[in-house]
Amino acid sequence: MIETILNVVVDGLLIGGIYALIAVGLSLQYGVAKVLNIAHGEFIMLGGFITWTSYKVFGINPLLSVAICGPLIFVLGFVLHLALFKRIRMTSETEGAFEGNSMLACFGLMFIIQNVAILIWGAGIKGYSYLGFPVSFGGGAVFPANRLTTLAVAVIICIVFYLFLSRSHMGKGIRAAAQDPDTAQLVGVDINRVLALCFGFGALMAGLAGTLVSMCYKVEPTMGLEYTIIAIIVVVLGGMGSILGSFLGGILLGLIGSLVSHIEPGLTLASFYLIFMILLLVKPTGIFGK
Amino acid sequence: MILKSKRLFYLLCLLLFLLIMLLSPLYTSDYFLILVSNILMYIVLTVSWTIFSGPTGYISLAPAAFFGIGIYTSAIMGSQFSLPVILATGAAAAFCCALLVGMVTLRLQGIYFTIFTFGLVELLGEVVQWWEVNVTGTTGRIVPGTEYTTVYYTMLGIAVVLMLTAYIIKHSRYGLALQSIGEYEEAAGHTGVNVTALKIVSFAVSALFMGACGVIMATRWTYIDPSIAFNPLFSFLPVLMAIFGGVAHLFGPVIGAVIFSYLEEFLTTQFPYYYMLIFGVILVIAIVYLPTGLTGLIRKLGGRLRRRHANT
Image 1 (cartoon, rainbow over the protein chains, first blue to last red):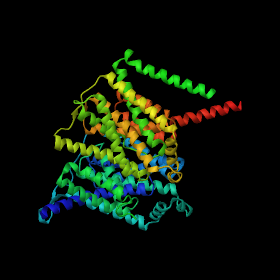
Image 2 (cartoon, rainbow over the protein chains, first blue to last red):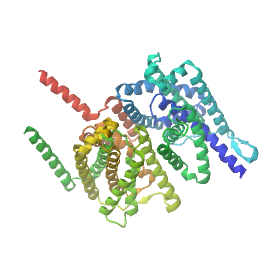
Image 3 (tube, rainbow over the protein chains, first blue to last red):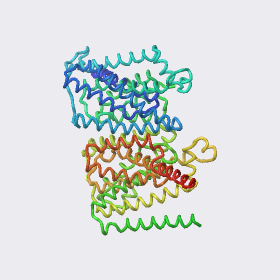
Image 4 (cartoon, chains in turn purple, cyan):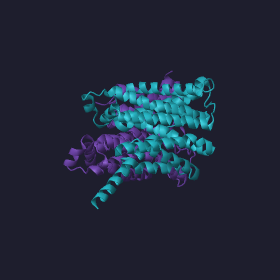
């Protein structure tokens, strides 16, 4: 009994770490840049495939490919914002219109990134084994080392990012833009640059999450949408735009998912949707929101 | 006088076009009928999407859900009942589901509503999948097929009724009320529009046609499973087609649907690997450069030409 509980809880924490990382990225894109990035999962997929390629083709350690994957995907996100969303923001009359239009543009991006990935890597499933040896806990629970590593890395990335937001000068600019873009601009924040940075950082976190995902699970070009949906659910769960809420929400959803899949594996995703819909109806500002 | 004769001319053109459509099975190939049925399906999905989402600006990603409900109604009732009964049931099921969804979700503001409707498609797909695997013990179902001409005529019938409904709604006071909701919801409420009821009913009416469309398409596909019936693409494509064509005018979504469904036919046969990629590129370009759609662009160009004409 205790063994089962421990198994479910640790398993939930392990997957929850990745959910948290993904959700913090989306929260940054939606909370500050106001782009509900439906293509978020595609950046995770890209991260996974870049890591796979660098490990299988160039023999680079997956943990080190964080340094390759991160900057590449950051630049991609940054440029995408400047090329696309900045223009949509200029031409949209209201904030609501911008949210709708940018979300639809993200659907387009989703198709584009997914199909470019299929053209490059093929439609098949890819995987590699890394740090697959078991680590034993007290009470008889055993977990593979790679999943423990991903949790540690995910938490470290979130903490570093939290410190960056709360301590650095640029982080202050981002927080100002999140609260009130117009006033932030008045006090000297280059709003277009900050929004593009936010979108880039969001993509970066998705990319790093992709690296971590590829260390434990198989990757394929169509894997993105599932992660996008999970990220959206977590962001709503934690309250739109709240970084800490997204982090806690990710861990919470991981625990719920682990519990449901222990009872009835086929209904994990359905239970996520159900929670999500109930939440939207009862408290759309999220359980940690104001 | 000029206005009246112009309207009469348009009406005659439409009737003539309809007559050609009605007679076309007599002198065309099966391939043509299938192609046109497919185009009609996208027209129905797109125009019915526009009834609600066009004027109000609430972007619904639920078409696939209602379409899928129609498909499953067809699969479950297929062998025991006649087509009109199944059509009515499928449409009614989608209508009731939309009423229910509308009642709980239309209080949500813009983007939340969109996410919710998208979640609905995935939820229905997952639950049906689970049900089929664990309760009925199957993954797919065989739907009794019908003849191409039956599919064609039914689809044409649905499309004609839909166009009439959309036209009547658009030119009635309800159409104006929906428009005012899209422009300023609070103000619309203050001027005496029953905002909630109107949103729910128009959402349900649009779902009705999607359900009927699903019923008839299932008989053409003959095999269905949850991933075919609740394919999110049937939510994205109508939105893309409507926005590409422009939602301000009734013919915008029709033009968008015709162009894109033909493009789909062309691309899937000629460039199967680039098909979705090209779709994505067109969607992004349409959003960035054509926010009012093709009809908006044509109107703008027309206005410019007329002005130049007046100047000279």
